[in-house]
Length: 175
Length: 175
DNA sequence: AGGCATTAGTTTAACACTCAACATTTGGAT
DNA sequence: ATCCAAATGTTGAGTGTTAAACTAATGCCT
Image (cartoon, rainbow over all chains, first blue to last red; front, side, top):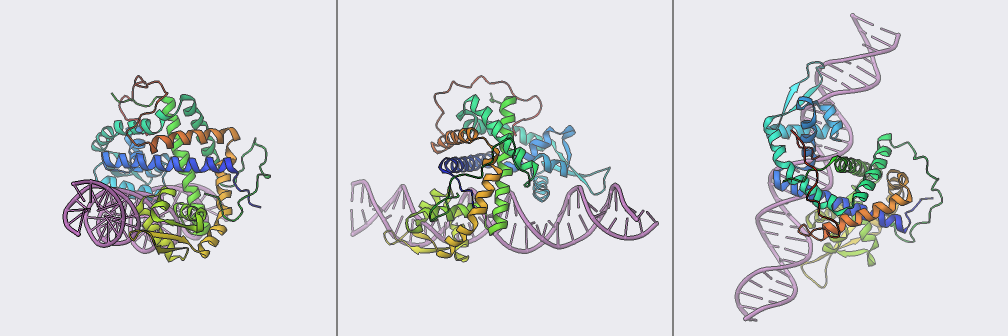
């Protein structure tokens, strides 16, 4: 019953997996080395820096940074200790709280950005042709749309794949 | 001096980032739910299952699973507690140790594989045309090659990109 | 043989992430 | 008005990851 991966699908999946894992661990390591924060924290600072007045509700920030509420809460606590973010109470909703990027935080982000952008270029964009960058964009868009639609939806416009080739003999080649 | 990202590069990078992050967290969550281990552990079991006699030196396993030695050491300790992997001393090198997949571990992997493969299909492969799968493969190869070559190497066969468009006005759009 | 850099693997501590439980507030339904 | 489900945000426990220090064995070099 299981629709195992055929050889080409398997190669594609495993290569993708390895490439993205190495890519992110490399970017994370460089960011950690250069400015002492993980990439997810950097992402939070970026989203804040782009918001009007550099303030956002926690929940909006969580959404913007693709983070869970819990993770964001922990992260902001840590960024607050560093003096890069300040929490304020929300005037219109007593449940809520606001996260504001401090001047110090903005300065830290400005200091970190050039080397991070350079990393992204060096490890990703410079390795791809402009056409591949375009392709990667479209592919990512498709994946994202599927994931955002929720786990129940089914991709359409594509022929059904129920008849794909059979799986492994003895061992699960499902990496 | 900084080669900031232009609009298209920025969109591509951010979409890629969001898509892969959501994809992996989704796959991880489903694997955790269905068989109680993170994806990195699953990867370890798969690599062991494919090795001759289902045994590998720790260092070989680390390489195969794209893991650091430290991480692997922790992971194998945990998998050993579960009875899925057993450590043996290496006969040819007294420093070394071998990790062997137990029958129990193999059975657990077999049980986990179908639903995991289904996840990979549902969230990734089914969303892409066969051509896009091919493109993703090539893109991943390119990234991987660059990363494996080491941080010092420069991509070749591509025109230099020193003259890209300038960066942000006030704030680092480097997400 | 002796010395020593290298390699294999583990360990510790600090940190980040997840899940579930929790307190609080909101907003609608009756 | 009252009740209750839904939403906001935090917290704590458990788990995984990382970097650096550490032990032990290897193999080369003289």
